[in-house]
Image (tube, rainbow, N blue to C red):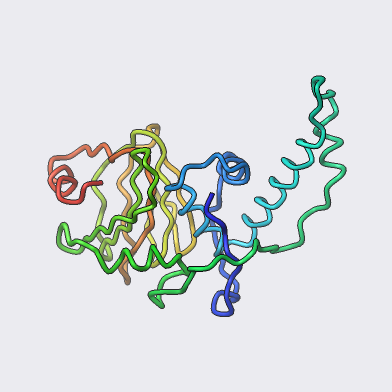
Length: 231
């Protein structure tokens, strides 16, 4: 699990986020069962989101209390209630320990780990207004992690997914079926979702993406771009 560092002085101004981690992602991250690709995206979101940091802290506390309840006999029916009663609610906006290697770079993105910022220097233009930069997290499980930049007002090809896809907005914004995702917001999609997000006007959009497999693109032009992008 990638640690979620505490905000630096440059990050302490309040961010208004609209889209947060699901309960399932919180539990997977807190328990350490999340893969490296998704963990990097989640940790980057946590750096910007005090609300989700508090939820992770609470999940970790609940997990620890439940472990103390485990004995050689089955758990009592009220074990969870007793575990919850034993833990204090996390302090508001509590942040995990700072981790080395987290920096605001480039300056107009939300704060990202150094390996993410460095990946942007290796970007490849795959279509007018679109570049992709793979991020090596050493997952070894076939998952893909990459930065995706799309120009303002552009529409993504219609696509669905083979497995889970997490998309974290680092800069700019996009609209998906009438829902706006801005800096720090996270989107979760799977094979039940078929969509074609549109980049908001006024600014390019850069996202950090982790997905279990390559996208399932529905139109021929999108497949041509996908062949160059490798996503």
